[in-house]
Length: 231
Image (cartoon, rainbow, N blue to C red; front, side):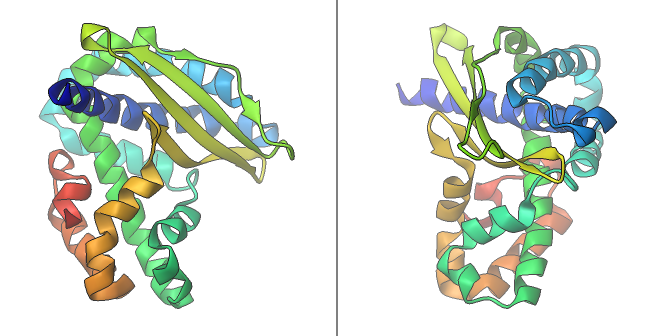
């Protein structure tokens, strides 16, 4: 029902945010930079790191949520294509924007995503610890050019609710970079497009960037997310 679906989404936001953070820890290693690791193998290793972090330090993150935000920011900055994702989120508005406007938006969008991921981890850390061991990843599906790939993760939540998460990655400069994530078939990029649509129509790229900047300067991790900004 609706409450079950909402609960599943909340759990996945925590798991997904945490998984991305610790996935990037592994992707940032020297070996991964020299020779990209198979994304499915990377994500399988992420689960162990994730469960350990949530189990051992979950209460510390709850008491000090800024620690989760700082960690996410440090790891995400060089390893996610925020500029590319940002342009997709902006759609036609981005095609009409200047390079300077796009750069400013990418910087604020990066901060927005970091806040959202850190918030998910802080809010759902106990469930991350509880369900993380049950995550299973299917074999990587590589694109024809071998430079893009998709990995599907599966987990069973409360009440036997199954959930699938698809990670979309591309190889750039010897490392895999996340460029989209689909939760239960819903794209992160598309979700942000919908969340930002009203602001873009009324105020354009500059207005949305200013709104994100204001939100980023004042929001604690527990307050982050699309609804906190522009819903």
